Image (cartoon, rainbow, N blue to C red; front, side, top):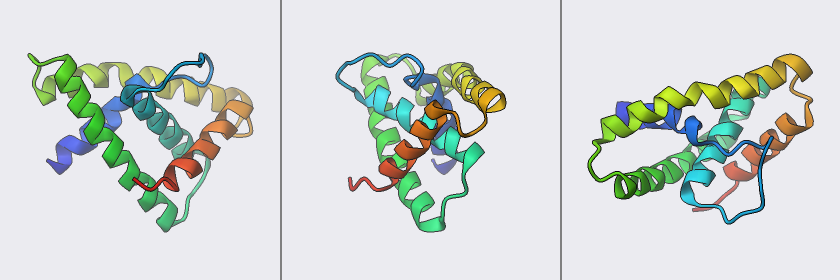
Length: 128
C-alpha cells in the first residue's frame, strides 16, 4: 500500500493546474491535488524545508491524495488503482518539465515559481 501511495503521489502531478494558465473557477479535489504536486515539485527543486514543514506538507498531501484517488475511482469505476496510477504517470512529466524549464530559464526566483513555493508553505500549514 505504501508503495502504491508513493506511485500515486508521483503520478498525480499530471493533474496539476498550471499557475501559467489558471482561470477563475471553483477548485475540485483534482485541481487541489495538482496544486500540491506543483508546489511539491517546485519546493524539491528550489528550497530545503525544515523537517516539521516537510512532514506537515506530506501529511496533507496524503490526505488530498486519498480523496483524489476516491474521486478517480468514482469517475472511472472500470479501472483498477494500478490502471489509474499508470494513466497518471504517463502525464506526470509534462507538468514537472514545465516547472523545470521555467527554473532553468529564469531560476527559482521566477514569480510563478515563487508563487508555488508560497503555496507549499501554505499547504504545509493546513490543518485537515
